[in-house]
View: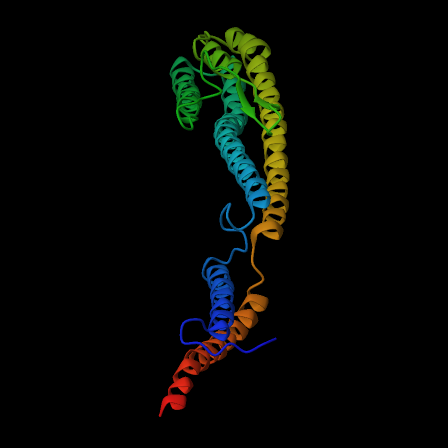
Length: 275
């Protein structure tokens, strides 16, 4: 290849400049990866993988939304369980008062004291029901509605069943007649027995349904972690590798700059021919 001695055209300078520009472009890419932690930060980096990553990010957002809904449902279910458990804990005391009221040997004043005690217990049960609300939803109050919660991205549902029968039975026993022993025995056999059955049924149903919500939440967390890891494999930069590359490119940049400087000085040597 012939060497061109010209002050107008300097091929060596062009080569050195192209090399420096290439190094600078590579340096910009590496610096961007180091600063963002991403090897695919936008469509210009890798259009297909960026599009895939955006789809995965949307899926992760949807999983987060489903998980939030499940957590809200768990709150509703757990508060309802707390209310029913509170009533369940009162039942032994209620049963005791009814048994005492079924005793024909107590006096009228003693019966009144026992009935007042009984009324306080039932009033407490009603308070448990009234306070068993989470985010405006109460599963054990009168007129409660079943809560259906999205459980996955395919549209599956998990259900929290309304247990308004608890409130109905508490109301029934609250209005029961306890003026004599016979009445009390009747309440034990009917209203109390119904309340006990309804409370046990509610505890069993709500416990199973909240357990299902817990299991689904745990499963979605595992799915999310796996999906997040897959996204990282697509877009995350290997910072150890990029750091080493950054150092290498910085050295190349310095050398290329010196080479360009030397190439740019070549036309100056031609001046010596005219001395």
